[in-house]
Length: 115
Length: 283
Image (tube, rainbow over all chains, first blue to last red; front, top):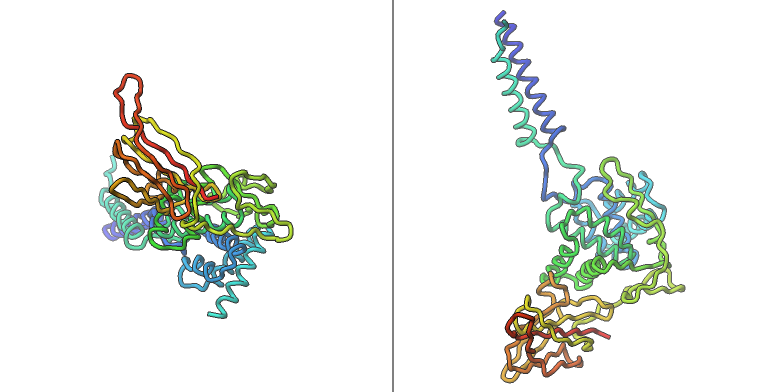
């Protein structure tokens, strides 16, 4: 009878841990502030790439566009732009937006090549 | 009557505490789907700069507004103005600071700069959102038609050139014309307040303009933009009674001379020294 009791106690402990983890990770995870741009959701990242592409279309300054994309961290600007483009293609961005982003990707690939 | 299994309940609570401690403190869930609202302040500045650059290129104000709303600023105009001042103060590109200030100005005035010859602005933002939509599709115009703006000359329509060209950023040293001079009798303002507001050729308030004020036996320089809450092109100076002042903005600009405090009287109050409001603009 005593050994059964210990099994119940261990099961209660495990259940408590499981409930706590589920609550802390899924139901009410920690709210974060002061985050870096690489943590942004995919659609926000893609929209940021679109902003850079819109500006690049007029400014024609690949260095400036690369610096703007550089806030996403260690990936190359061409890779960041390509990721944004891939998201845009997969999620139904308009053709003109995709064309702008494609232009930016091409420019960033060329810019990376001469760096 | 059955006994309450306190030992099991306490063990369950202990496990719950351990689980919460691990998930909230030791190993919180990794953030992979953050919103711009949660970005660090300096990254929010980058985000605003990108929004302003995109607006400068496309003139799509509703889209810029939708994007700015993602940052959760209580007052986006004030946030943009303050950022423009920080950018100027830290020696960043004048052109990028101007883009940020221009967006603030456009938001204040509700200007939508149109580029009908540019295919970019005819696009519809179709970001597909799985959770909360960051951009309200209804807030983004599906098509923008040409609407001439009387005070925004950046929107030049050139049928032969498919892309809009940027209007050069005005230099601070370019000559200014005195376009307005009026006495101000406002008991809520400091006595003898000389207000100077400087506009560039696009009727946008110009920060960083040097103003020289001279009087018999003295002179001083001050700059616009140090009080962004009152406007990027705003500057002021307290005049002493019975002294005549002369104000000029750079060589070749108009000179406002004989500026003195006026005598004001509001009903039921004693007289007090009034101020003057000068408006300068680049032609």
